Image (cartoon, rainbow, N blue to C red):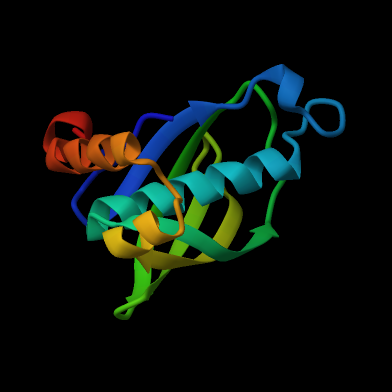
Length: 140
């Protein structure tokens, strides 16, 4: 996924390949859930410049999603406190019909906790910090 931002939300345009179908030409719900988790996760990372961990995600499937069609995924923050962020993720069809809606709760994880829990090694921490510093170049 490639991400774009308006500084409040992240967006991504994508197409689900045929081999990720559930029934016939419909996208598998697990794939749609993964897309929603990714768009919400990267939105939290971008907005808070923090490591995050998904605590929960609830997905409502509103309309079928065909494989091989252009989709738009987007996410925005709903609420945040010192330790958690709640985000909303959406997937729209090429005709702008809402297909899926998700709400996710994400733990905002500080570097001390990342190191203590060994979530990422030191090289991964350095890479993450470099990525966060260069978001303006990555997200256009």
